[in-house]
Length: 116
Length: 112
Image (cartoon, rainbow over all chains, first blue to last red; front, top):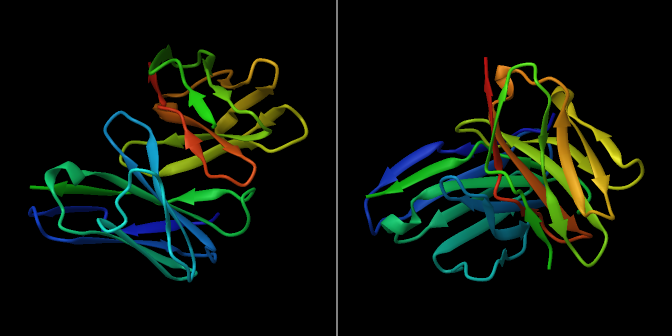
């Protein structure tokens, strides 16, 4: 089946630094990638949707200057948390979809970010 | 706007017993419905999905779900659970070409 990887699986950083998380579709071309955030014991909240080669579409309340998303190729999207603060600590999950909206989203294993 | 309600935050059950995880949705248009499973410290894995056709959908690991339009429900069932089914289960809905909206999840706890 389709596989989506994320790197790193976990990261600890100091407050004020930036962290980049990579999301890769390993065996298919992802025309659309999604970034979610999951707080403990809560559901996934969609942060943004990105299509290859175009700017990401952010959900209401998500700061685009804080969470920079780049989808430069059909197999790679990156999320950069800029000037991270402790409240940004969370579980970040990406997903990728090969075709249209009826196609399945395949999820990565997630990246746990802890900001000290 | 679409929304998903999973009424049970936790469902404890003994091994080999049947289980039903409830999911209700609200939407003003036709929807597509999904169940995902999340094992500890892992990403989500698709269990099954309803796009159209038969209202009874069979998925992986012996799970099935039934779409009930009149009750706006998409409950997940398994006739006999295993210890390995212990995980968080998320119901999700998509309206047409929009994005997925997830419920808050139900933790299935299977005991021997």
